[in-house]
Length: 328
Ligand code: PEP
Ligand code: MG
Image (tube, rainbow, N blue to C red; front, side):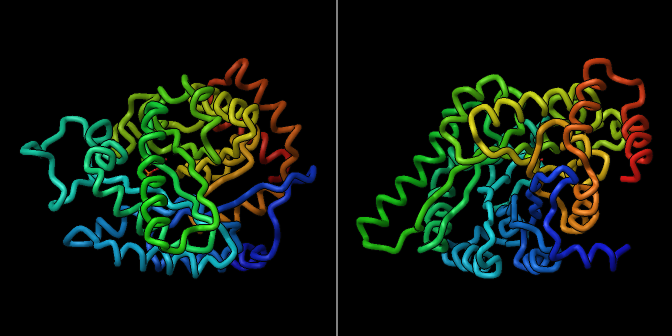
């Protein structure tokens, strides 16, 4: 099968009924970048910039950040890379970035993390913005913000980037050709205000790892909750379908960048919910391309509508039987 998937490198993921699906990879280190060519993926849909911070003993300097981002874009060539600004804090706390006097958090996943840290320690976001903008000089920069719960947070983060652009323009520094701003939807509350947020965005990426744990109130890493933390539960699927529909209505490209998209049955379900872009673990690109080429979108969309109107007791089993029947 490995050889079969390798042979799919040059194959474009097009469904049986002729729809091109975008298949991106998730990455976080320089060393992940060769996966782009190896898999023939369309780009990097999620570059987790915090990895550089997590493997470093001190806050990475602007120069080090710039160098990494430039090397990543160089190795991607013409393919787009979406850089996510740091998602640190909470359980990924760093010794050089402590709370003021308060280290322990009862609920780190819902705590002082990601954009919440970056906006408060705005020096952090300023430096990262500057590094990304410098690295992307002459090209298009794609940047997205994690853990947004309200539209103003997107505005505030974007303003930090725009401030740096103005500053660089004054200094006559080379700027990116274009900057595309996106948001991650990981906090359920954001779904209630998408009509306010979507017109501001170039793209939206659904982070199903965090979104699922918040929707089901089930810790994503708790072994005892593994069965409850189910990407195929009707609530999760209906929720994603609703977001996808709203995104399409606003003409905003929608991606799923959580681990869910890299699993075969889940990917099939996502296609049936209207998702046309996935960002997944590199090892899943081959199998996903193979799956996509056999899927008939109207058929899975209709089946999914039926199941979500009247959910079967065993969604996974039902979906599996449906896939096996069609030799997917
Ligand atoms: C997510 O939450 O789905 C996501 C992609 O971000 P992370 O896994 O890095 O929290
Ligand atoms: Mg997340």
